[in-house]
Image (cartoon, rainbow, N blue to C red; front, side, top):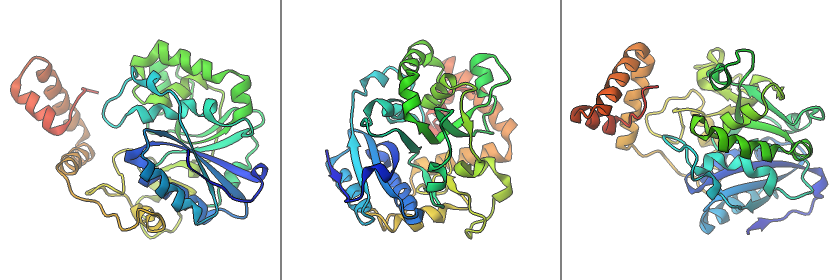
Length: 329
């Protein structure tokens, strides 16, 4: 285990958690640096739950945050329990790691902020940290794009669904309420239904028992038309979440704030990286633009291709394989 220590008291620290494999370590470095560049006088201690994270990448992440005299500690556990979970498209075993965070963190941690590795922090995170969470276990931002997801999962239309990319967690209540046990039960009983991996699990477990945060704490481009097309940094949200297909490190991906990622990238050990055009980028760009310009036509063609593939039509099989189309919905 690699750790960079600072002299400040851990009792004054803001604890921040990220969960990754080697594919996302560069992007988590950007997340951490963006937070450190904007934090005030408070100390920050990072915990990283890594799935087979290479020693070289651990060292580069340590070197990145060491410039800010921050702490990073790498945690590991038994992740094989997730091997039977649903994994397709963007989901991997790393998508489920945050469900184990509470079991892996040391006893002196009573509260933490979880951040996805595709976010950029643009304000002092202390403001989020200081939100009173004494009556709740978890605080998050409403996910407007799939707001009806809990209705699909439970049949109830009166429950809000949150995005799990930014979470403020009361770890004491989590432990007292045996949330880890509830998560395990949910994975076993509903594993095949989990289209959005850990996010579905957390929403099922915390249904109607979470504190809503201001939407600026988890800004997702496709959800916030009021700040679309503002690439020059004005009216920046508190935390930019590059959720969905518009990843700034991918070629042919438009996001009005993608340069914020590259701004912080140059302050990491991965400085100098530039996207390389691949066949996958071209394919995904075609799908994104088709879905955006004619969503009904895209859905119809997709359903036809998938259904014909299931009937054994070779041409449809080829198109589905080339365009990476798996399911009708």
